[in-house]
Amino acid sequence: MSDETTGLTPADLEYELPVELIAQTPAEPRDSSRLLVIGRSSGAIEDRVFSELPSLLRDGDVVVRNDTRVFPARSFFHRATGGRIEVLFLCALTGPSPSGERWEALLRGRPRREEVLESEAMGPEWPLRCIEPLGDGRWVVESLSPAPVLEMLAGAGVTPLPPYITAPLEDPERYQTTYSCKLGSAAAPTAGLHFTPELDAALAATGISFESVTLHVGLGTFKPLPEGPLETVALHSESFEVEPAAWARLLEARRDGRRIVAVGTTSMRVLEHLTLQGATGEGGAPLRGDTRLFIRPGFPFRMVDGLVTNFHLPRTSLLALVMAFCGVDETRAAYRHAVTGGYRFYSFGDAMLAL
Image 1 (cartoon, rainbow, N blue to C red):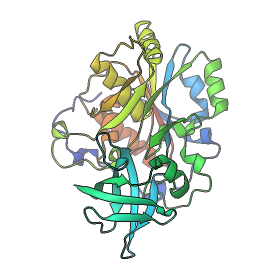
Image 2 (image 1 turned 120 degrees about the vertical axis):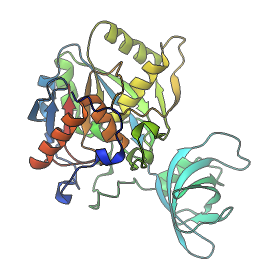
Image 3 (image 1 turned 90 degrees about the vertical axis):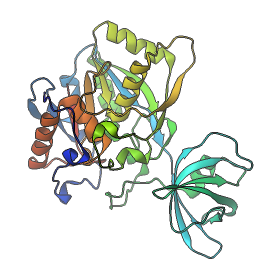
Image 4 (image 1 turned 180 degrees about the vertical axis):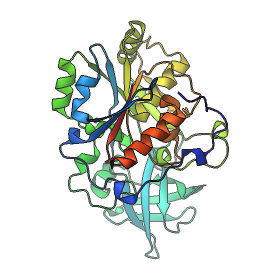
């Protein structure tokens, strides 16, 4: 692996990608997507298919997946003057609120502080107050409806797709993993989109076990990193939850020398965060919190041995994580191979397995 681990900037996370390689629709069936396999120690690259994953893992491996579920976070409101405001709900905020739930949201339009908006779909049943701008279009908003925001969004919201996907999605479930169950993400943990119940059964028959973690994905995941050395960048926060029994089983697997394979950068972030915190799973309470962990080249991995991930946008923390795990030069070589070989990129694209 490359020794280039310090002094990197977002410019080192650039690569050229023909626009036609940005996947607009998901593969059918899910596990028919291509899979680029990279050896972390050797840098060797192999072209496979995702359905071949059982032959690439081994008896005793533990596959860890993020079971978060995307909520219909995108909705439309209008001002008293008639102007339209698009509201993308990002995460619920804790703390006192005199009249309703407060959320961080991305607003597109020209809202004003303390202005009350009205839902296009729900009318006066759902007023929304703009409390405070946070910068970059983000606001603290306060729902003035007695019903929970997630309940209101069930009737007034749509699933937000990344802006680089311009084709309409016929089946919203294709932007959910087959095992998603914990509602709370503004974006899907897309490495998990390749799994099917049939593939799960084949993996289990090979002696591979599964564990679940929950990390609710925020849009900060996809935001380009600010200029400057990566070691000076402060990353966004995302909330997580892990059952103590699951964490105890993972620690036991680690002690037994079994490989931990994270599905997606989100699962990786939870696992390495908890390891850094010295979590034990004792006491019976769920392991909950927020993580700002920025995994970048030079990071010493303590828990994860393998990674399943999609191909990521340039200049993002996700690509920095892959470079940290696989090596800077090795990742660049793998991405060049993927571009040359016509792999499909981003959320609905193909996958990579690093072992």
